[in-house]
Amino acid sequence: MNTIEINDPYIGEWVTFIETDKTYDNNPIIDSYCDDILFKKVGNFYYRRVLEDSRVDIRWFGASPQGVIDSTAAIQQTFIIADRFNLSVTAGRGTYVISDTILIPQHPDFTFSSKTYDFNESIFLIKANVTVFKSGYYKNGQLISSIETGKDEIMSQGIKFGNFSLQTNFYDIAHPALVIKDWHQGCRLFNISSANFSTLLKSINNYYTVFDDLRTTHQHDTRLGERFIFSGEMNLNIFRSLIAANSLVGYKFDGPLTACHFDAVSIEGVTTGIQFNSSVYNCSIVNSYLEGFDRAFEFNDYINNFTIDNNYIRFVQPQHRLIKYKGLPLNNVHLLPNNTFIGMTDYQQLFENIENDYGYGMEMSFDTIHGNSINDLLIDNFGANFNINAKTKFPSYLANIRNGKGLIPGNYSGQYTRGYDGPSGFEPDSSLPGFLHLKTKIKNTWTQIIYVNLEVNVQSGTRYYKGFFVGNIFYDFNASGVSATGVLESHINNNDGTIDIKRPVSEGSDIIKITGEVRLI
Image 1 (cartoon, rainbow, N blue to C red):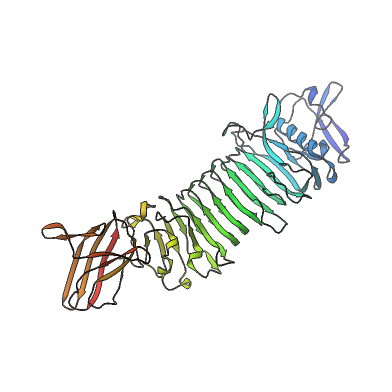
Image 2: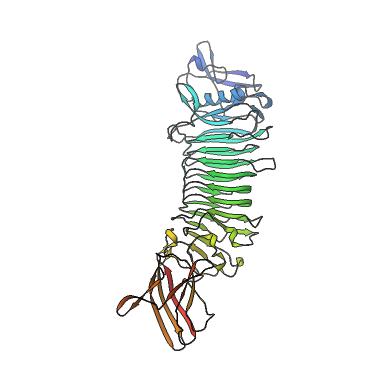
């Protein structure tokens, strides 16, 4: 088989071409392909450049690594040629000037083959206030932006894109540096850094995509921009080793998340760390570093399941909050015990409630070093009607629903919850000896139903009180049935609107022990 050697004018090296009539994707070579870069025609014979790892180098098409000549057109041409023959892209390490948007051709391939763009730790020096890379597709033979297409109309599989830095002499570039859309199975963004871009990435409707080692900051003093913006649906994504420093919002999600995982994510020097503006389903954040935030997590829609586990969390100022949430039914958040809290002076730093209409599906577990009683958690900002699980010392803290069948995600007004630290849902007040007085954390409403089943041991014997309150009227279970009686009374605590349950007359002797349950149903 014949070969020829040609000196590449851009890289100054001799390269080998092999005689063949087939392209890299095994189609016939035609004269229009013969650009003396990948294909060459000598007489009646075609020759194809011998490639290493099926990759083309942007330098072959005129991109200059010296950081002086504009390489925009050469890089775009490389992407087009690589896409035509199903090749990957690389670069000689250096600095490349870019002055306009470069389109990344979509790669619809349901065999899930990979297509890699690895720029060998090069620097892209951005000379205009533009988006640098954007998803594109071919329409009537022209490569155009795919951002305006419908959901999943033109999708990609297997794209691996990264290993470069973005730099600029501008104070700030307002356009997102990268905009990708409809990247699915096998796609990955990796090892990308930027400085002085308000937004590094705008991601639209990407499934199964891995966002790995993306680092972005703003070198100026003022927090600026939303570093990562995710819209459309986000399913089965992994967010790993991400940094979004010195920003107003680190990571903003405007569409629903399902089965997404955050690992080793940095939330530092931000007003809001991660902002969720749509529903969250079965997501988690682990092994991450949170410091210097005003609000680490902001939930503005349903939280169907979100787990916070094994993170380092440092509060810098007492007014800073870990979670800002909107109280909604079905909320279900798990703050697990192996998170480390530094600088937390008050449990109110854990939560900020947008309103107080609902209980809200929260489970919190702490190490015993964090206090003597989780009654400290029962503050107005937490929402209405919480359930405390006191089976362990400094245990899980639950809101909304917990019964004998286990945890059921939230319900309106915290139904089926109990109130105080303990399995009985009340705390006895013994300030008046001989009088039955129970404190609860149930917020008063005129339509609520509260189940009461008490055994009161006094020196003279045992008394039983069984029945329920409808509003503030107690209905007693007795031998003749159910009847409204004044055996027990419901009193509203004027300080916080919670209910105390009292018996209007003395038990006749000192109370030794009270067992049973008070439960909002």
